[in-house]
Image (tube, rainbow, N blue to C red; front, side, top):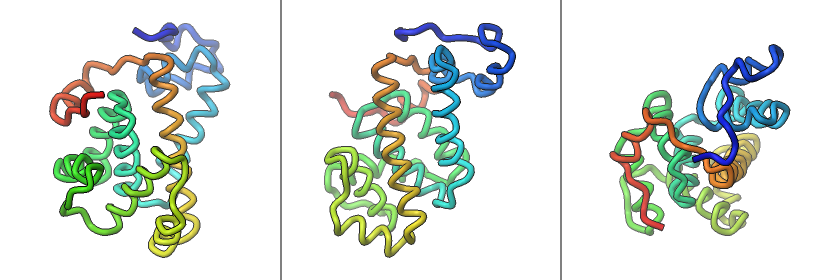
Length: 184
């Protein structure tokens, strides 16, 4: 049960009702602070719609954050988004557990590098010089910064989700059933 009420558009002033055009529980909770939600949504929209970073790589990085932090909300939402819109396969999703455990996978080297960067930033708050240099060589400076921002942003989102105790919408539960997170 969330620590704050889930708001509906009718609970908001007319100028803020657009904030719930995507009525996921995270946004319905964050609508208790419309300015904060607008700022959060702005960065999320940049990451998803304006960054030139490859969407598949972006989603793999987000999934790695969700896996490491054992965030059911983040994991389930991005299992769906990644598969539906960005070409991430079931095998890719299952490979995250193996990559995290240091086992070999069929993922391409760039995907493995992106996952490594997400693990390093999530566990150590930074990437190694070697990982950063490899990312910049493969992705270029702009997309390396976009990837770094994405990983940092979703590390913040999972903490927001956990602290506010945001519930998973029922339509996302099948993704947790199909791709269960490890026990804490």
